[in-house]
Amino acid sequence: RKEVEQDPGPFNVPEGATVAFNCTYSNSASQSFFWYRQDCRKEPKLLMSVYSSGNEDGRFTAQLNRASQYISLLIRDSKLSDSATYLCVVNPGSARQLTFGSGTQLTVLP
Amino acid sequence: ETGVTQSPTHLIKTRGQQVTLRCSSQSGHNTVSWYQQALGQGPQFIFQYYREEENGRGNFPPRFSGLQFPNYSSELNVNALELDDSALYLCASSSADGTDTQYFGPGTRLTVL
Figure: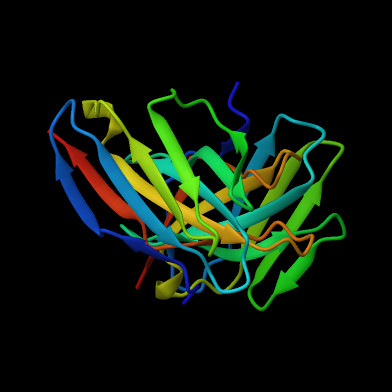
């Protein structure tokens, strides 16, 4: 079983749609959680950290369920510029070593 | 941008050769992590350096080695290159402020022929 598993995708959605990505992690001792965004042939960029209480940044909402070892990302009112690969990332607790999922590709269509 | 720089941008090598990739961390960051990202996959952790010492290693063979310098810049060395080493190599810097946020450089795309 992979340490971090994500929806396989790809997701193709129209502009303005709401889209949700899910992720599960295997290490119950994991300390911190993130969503990164990666554009084609570019480096990953931090989108947002994920907290147990849930957090929101504009159109983006992230949720963490430690009991189910589940992380989600909700994007509302999708824009063309949201097209990218979204990476679910977990710190398993040792020296800030990040474990990445394989990513979910999102394409927002006009 | 993140302030993390990497060189070179692209590199082509042949099997059996050796390669050195370089990374300059963001100002104020003393930790550098290296990742390998194969096509269609998420980045895989190679190792991390903190204050010039290796501070954790992923599932990579010993022919992957590294260094961190007093100014916190870092090198990744790969010996005896194999075709499967073709990938995007990313470095990420972070600080010792208790957060886990890592900031990535633009990467070096290595092709092994």
